[in-house]
Image 1: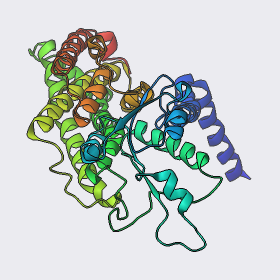
Image 2: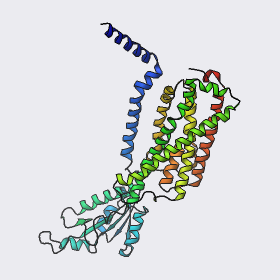
Image 3: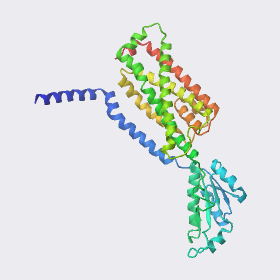
Image 4: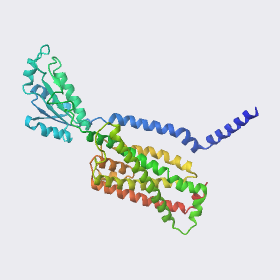
Length: 400
């Protein structure tokens, strides 16, 4: 009975401690569920909108030998399809434009399609049914949407007598001939969606595992106060801590990113080298963005750690910020693309995510990259100044 009473006393003591500490109760009980709920809410909306096309988008579709009846239906204003008639001699040029994502779709009807369809007898075929070829690029959302729309309309128009095929394979059009997206295109699309978010998370968590220990950990152990009595300037000390932590945060992010890029082709069953997907220029710009973003994260986490009484409390303060980092990593999906307006790139964290996406998607605007770097450096200097002022406050430094 005495043992049971001891268990009850200890349980009561621990429960009282947790319930009486509002910050601890919130971070341990409420915040995990809140973060998961918010995260899944946004992820659900993003996954639904990722493959949607805006209502005002005009599909660019080229057609060869399309019957006038089908052309009139497909080019109806409410369908938002800009239908352009083309010659057979231009077919390869147009296919290349679809592959380069300059236009959305190419449709090729056989010559005298209506005559061939009427003459075709499925019960006693003298040859293959007349085939309609629709070339698309599945690495482009607009092309996928245009294909679905045109395929449905075409199939409906001639469904009364199934005397034709769509995208049938043959010696002239083997399997996969109608898909103009390469493995590299598909990989780039996946990278453009995954890497910005994952890189931001790797970078932030790498910094988060170091910054609290470097500042609030020393504060908790009492060594920070001893360090501050040295003749070293507070600003130099703050900058040194930020720079040193940033080095390891960048190293962690680069190793994680390299592992992801090199392993993704195998995971996606794509047979090509991912290492050569980008040039030295892209990798150099990406490195600069990663370094300045690490400075931003470390600066922010250092300020949070300076106000915390322990490493545990500093980590609790930093965890909700991770949600903002994730949302910034998905910002290009939320906004439907990388914004070109310069003022977006004055916003720390958001600007880094957009710049990373622009680099990976080959949508680089030099001015925006430069603004991102400058904004991140200025933010770091401001945080360094504030951190130095915090180090001058005995109330904060010795608050345990």
